[in-house]
Image (cartoon, rainbow, N blue to C red):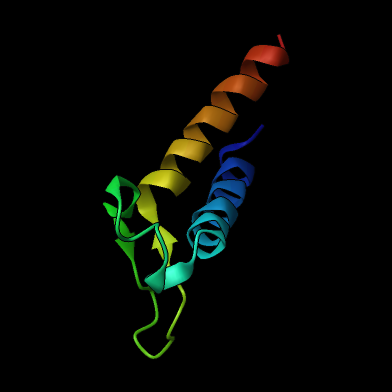
Length: 70
């Protein structure tokens, strides 16, 4: 898996998971998972992006798929 693909999937997870767990009023921001979560658009009432989740998912995906390709 290339880095671009891993980062793209990580970015999708970085947007999807915080929104799936309630958005700005949900459990995501009120727990330890809210560390590193930002609001990328100031005018958007519910859009969140988790930077650690996106980067962590990209690194894990890259490691797993490179390990399986050998």
